[in-house]
Amino acid sequence: MAPVSGRPNRSDKPERLVARHIEFLGEQDGLPERELKATLASVFVRWEAVQRAYLALVRYETTGPHHVALCIASSEPDDRTLVDCVLDLFEGRFGPHEHLDVLFLRGGQEAELGRACRAFYAVQPNHGL
Image (tube, rainbow, N blue to C red):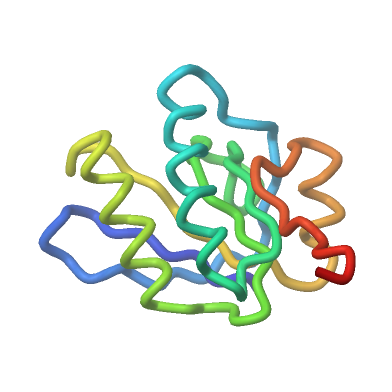
């Protein structure tokens, strides 16, 4: 099972959902999404636990509609402060009527996701600096 976080509207706290199956359908991309990715990448640079991030189309379980999810590989999974920060940025850009799921990748999920979507953020090695 993989935890998924979202917030139905701006005044609500993030809601924790559990999906037994997540299908990664592809990358969510377009001009607004690229702007969001750039903003998020500038935040993640200062958030040391975040190793990689993807903006993906996902489907939970085996049927149903697709959702947009920010998928994060982090050394601190389920970081509520990070989720709040991300959702505040997202809602500030797109409004409270839009929805974004935040998913912390577990186990083999990142390898599966990598076949459908490329990371828009990845920690850059220091090369001894």
